[in-house]
Image (cartoon, rainbow, N blue to C red; front, side, top):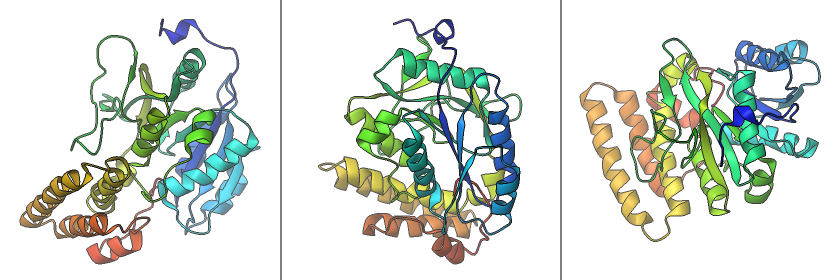
Length: 320
């Protein structure tokens, strides 16, 4: 198969874009207007407000591009639940591929067209993503795809492998992921037990089990600004990263799950001890909470518990 998708462009594509907002209207407006300014693609925009506590809803209602559908959640449903509300609306509007796009991520029109070309050229591909780079020069690669979170501590691929530009991965980064509508209709939406983090690993696993390929186009680029989420990475991000591995293992490793859970429990205990020894008590407490919740099956959103126990303020971040 010739994977030089640049030589096989279509003139027009239908595409739905789901953008999640939480107390970050400026980022969301900038992201939506950038998409609305594309020259050939005309994405249908679905903006989901995840129960923002500021004036986000009023600003979005006034300043979003015309014909954008705004969905207002009554509570913070996390990345998985919030995104699902937008996906439901997108699927109800038609069978266009659905792009999940963080409001602090950027993908230019030619790169998005490459992803759409991949779906058009290869029917077996169900989910495709670009290489994710840092927003600021020198644009270091953050993720060139991801590997199995049940088996590896560091799941990120940070180099594009040699060979064909389009290659298979275990899962795609949720910050920029293009999903065929048929995949969502057949295997279901994001699992809301995760709340935040690992839900794309779960979706891609289900898609691959159903016979779809999950790939990265190594010649497509997107850029992600991680600065806004930096204050959360020591506590909430760490909590969900540790806890959600146990959800993933419980779902997909029926026979060896006990062994994998035991290994990750030991890792969590060692990590908590290391963080405590380094004086990072909030992060250590978050890891211990994640371990207890992961083993006991306490799923879903735990922002309030974790931030209260770890004595940190919740910082507005779109994807939580």
